[in-house]
Image 1 (tube, helix red, strand yellow):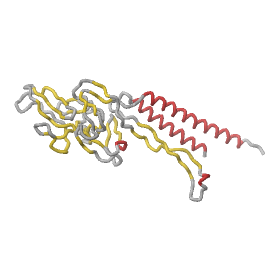
Image 2: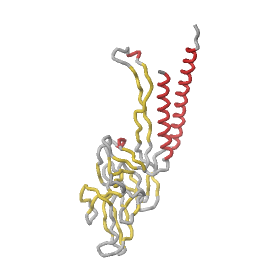
Image 3: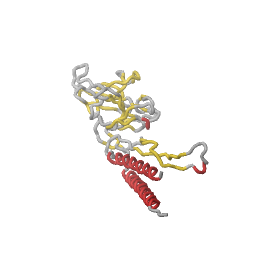
Image 4: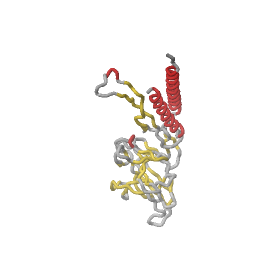
Length: 270
C-alpha cells in the first residue's frame, strides 16, 4: 500500500509544480490571477473499523483555487487602457462565437468598425446612456463609436471617465456620450472558468453575472491610462516551487525505502 500512497503524493506534487510553473510563466500577463493547489487527506475505514486504527492512504487534489487579489497597477497613458480598482470584471463579446467573456485585462483599442475591443477583437460591453450620459437600462451591448456626428464632423478621439462613461469627441469640438462601461461581479468568482488570454466564463459554481456601473458597490472605479498587472509574487512562487520539489523527492524516497524493505523480505531465508 505504501507504494500507491507515495505514488499519489508524487502525482500531487507534480500537479502543484504545474500550477506554480503556470503562475510564473504568466507573471507578466496583464489581468492574470494566480492559482494555488489545495489537497485533502484520504482515509480508509468501515463502520466496523476501530476509529483508533483507521489508516490514512495518501492525499488527493481537492481543488486548484484562483486568487483574485488586486495586482499592481501600471500607468500607461493610453486613454483606452483601463484598470479596475475593485472586484468587478470587464464584459466582452467574443469575436469568434459571440459568447460572453469576463476579464480584468483592460487593454482596449478602437477597431476599424468603431468598436472598442481587446487585442483578440472581443468587443467591450456598455450600458446605453441618454444625451446627458445617464444610464437608461440594464441591457448591455457593444460599444459603438460613430465615425461622424450628426453635423458630419469626423471622429477625433475617445475618453473614458472613472465612472465608466465613454465619450467620443469630434473635429467640430463636440463631445457625445456613447455608453457606460458595464462591470460584472459574481457571488463566487473562484467558480469562474478560465478560457485563456486572461478571460473567464461564468459557470454554475460562479453564479450568473450581476452588472453594475463603475464607482458603485464593490465593482470599483476605473482608472483610465492604466493597466492591472499579474498578481503573481515571484518570490512566493519560487518558495512554493522548492517546497513542491522537496515533496516530490520525499515521496520518491518513500517508494525507494518501501522497495528496499520488500527486497529484504523477499530475500529472507528460512
